[in-house]
Image (cartoon, rainbow, N blue to C red; front, side, top):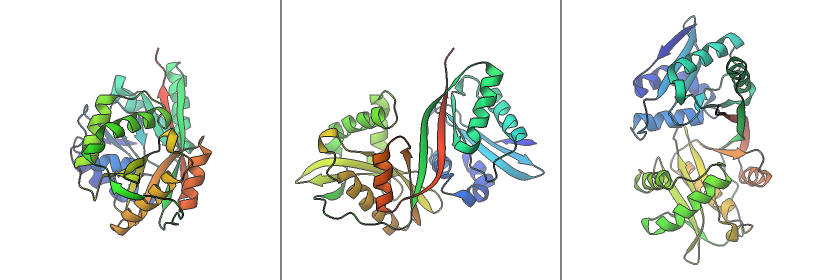
Length: 290
């Protein structure tokens, strides 16, 4: 087993891209984060970029941008247990205290977590079970009043509150206002072909939001879909997601991706109605403190 570490995200991308795009939908998050690293949007500690090879063949790739959990690429068939053990040992050695969790395909990330628990005697917490969806053709949503428009700086205070609500409800984490403002700034100032934030507006009033980011060679990820409680059950999120998806296809993307919480049957049903189809399940684990 050969382990190759990279300092330059672009060099890492050149090494793994052909492998990752064989399962582009499954690897969309890793590809999108890598694209952000290359454009220098990430300002945290030095990222961990590693490729695990056997006889010159890439078995899997891993990426970590602290303070986020490490991300493991999707492979089919999954890597053998010996490969997984090598991945775990390397991440523990290189990341040290920054190794705070794991995200990856449900089929084998659980094996990594089990090995970590056995080795450390600690417990990992399943933070979220998610479903990756992909859309290539939109089923329009009819009968919902309103229209889509780009978010504007004048919406800042409202959007901050909505992002905070999204972090609590969808991400199950306490909102960090400083981080939210930084993210909003990135959305509002980005090239609209690669990142953007849209609202659904009814009679001049924003009632829902959705963003997109993380372009891959052929697709782009939709996220941060949020409607405040008082505006729910009116079809706004469905209409906005459908419209933003069509907008991205019209820009030339071959498909759109999104992640859903498997414990939220409403959102999973909505996305299927729009035309999104399930690809694979992804689990995110956090390692418990002492």
